[in-house]
Length: 113
Length: 117
Image 1 (cartoon, helix red, strand yellow):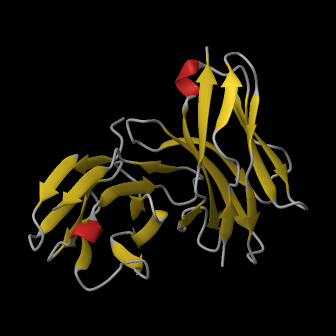
Image 2: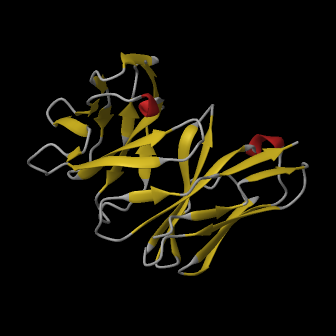
């Protein structure tokens, strides 16, 4: 089975540009999570969805960040406008309700210059 | 609020020996889940093992076992017969089980493990 698929794997963009990160969860999974990893703050949850509905977005840093899940097989995390402090690895993860395993994608490495 | 503490500095182990990575936690939730993930230098997060707070037995997955001591609020990862490929960063994480095991994870800072040949 295919795992969680994220794109792009690497992105370098200029400050002020819009960035869109994409995620395809494992087929059949009903939970989707977006995490961010930085050296300073470690791994932190940004937002998570259950059955395509956002459940907790308290980790979204500010209005520049937005996430959508239009269907069960696709989610986006958008940053507009991007800033250098947004440079991080962004992970998407998914899980199946009732199971005790949360699977991560390979991450999207974002650098904002 | 949930908190995960991983305070060990970089750990070193000789190939084929066992190693224990420490994790302590704090939570007010009556039930919760504990996870360990491995992050090699390539960056992906690899699920290793899960322990539920009401599980009677310690979890095991191949060479990985979780030494769960509920009263001490510790969930140490034991890796037996270390291999060179085990060199990585290891994260302990916790979830509340209010919504099943799939609520958000709180991660520790991680421990770097280096396996020596």
